[in-house]
Image (cartoon, rainbow, N blue to C red):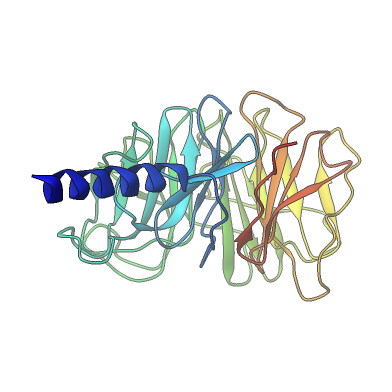
Length: 292
């Protein structure tokens, strides 16, 4: 009886310790996207072994299985993504296109489940228009290129991509207009207003490495040493000379709050639209705010 009681106490202690471990520092093996929870309280990062969240200076593992999300896009009702299932999962690999409306506790398989993994993927924050750059042929996409869906991946339309030169590196979808999409290639930044059929090259003088639309539909553009945010005069976060901006996102509830993630797994947050920055991840190691 005493042994059972002691065992129970040990189990309870371990469970309590596990609960208390949330908020402590962790290591992000990869960063495959960036977003906010719909209430704007949490920064969400897909980090190879599941979603992690940052809120009030603390880090936590997200709900649900620890899937290796790729092409992650937060929207007003949750998120869309592609990627791979967690190790040991019964889910098919790759995930195709999935979405979650409950912070990752469950996901809905939309299309190409077990067939395709999209790294180049963008979803409109309010429109939920899905744009993907297809790396290979599959049963729904007969050739490599840019495709879009306006009905949660039930049907797909191929874009002509007129005017685009170079290998596609990144895709961004307008939050409110399903026909507006931006592409980054090694040749520059391109913007389309007709669902990707025709693109115009933007007059950006530096190599663009990261793009996003803010909540008002203005482009946020990042590079190695430069950052463009509409109606702001942002500074660059302090980066190594071989690092560059990979992801940018604006809070859905505070237009002055911007988060940037880099290729070397550094993450910075600004509360004044890029004038100043606070680092919250250093080369994959999260930084936990200490209590005063």
